[in-house]
Image (cartoon, rainbow, N blue to C red; front, side, top):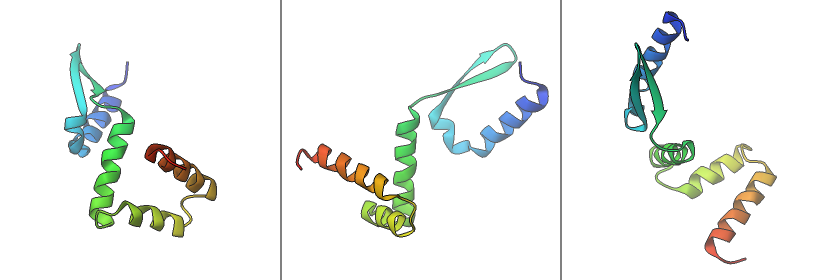
Length: 93
């Protein structure tokens, strides 16, 4: 069982992450709340990236990916993997 200090820290963290209210569900277990994700981490990540694209990249996925490539955030292997994934989703090679 977490200590009172750990619980207080967790509650504070949850308040800071107020935007996650729509992403979490909680239930009472005794004197504690147990939080569970409402949607998958992958889905949340996709929505967060969309917000980044809209906020910082003028809505352009191309601008995001090219910026990451130019800043050497994506390795050649990662870019190759992305290319293969996109080609497979488009149904052509």
